[in-house]
Image 1 (cartoon, helix red, strand yellow):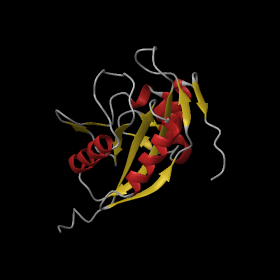
Image 2 (cartoon, helix red, strand yellow):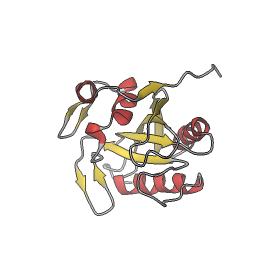
Image 3 (cartoon, helix red, strand yellow):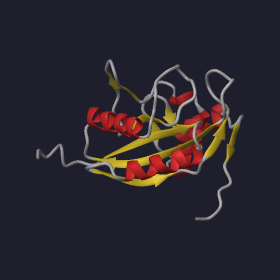
Length: 170
């Protein structure tokens, strides 16, 4: 293992679901993220109910965010997220359509990556309250590369259409 591979990189993942008991799907995604190799789940947000971004003739979403420390490189992490989605039954039918689970790599440290299959930071992150507010639950002072502090971005976009989910204690 090279010295670079041994470094732990903070990464942030957005989680969303609006099918098949979305709260349970998001909780299952947290559990799967906690099992990723060479990675540690170190933070998780509250759950939020939000209106769909795309077609409105679908159920509301449950959104959350996870903070990981990982030794996986960005492409390895992306492949791992896609595997979790596939294992959880994600079907890519309609852009912004209903889905059982959606895992988006929002940030990979301070990296800026522009590849055919991966853009980091995630292109919509700075303008989506359902990404920013969950991230602010545990990382409000983190800088979204090229955009600014998460808390300032969240304040700018506002919380319209976003509601914390009241969960019973486990």
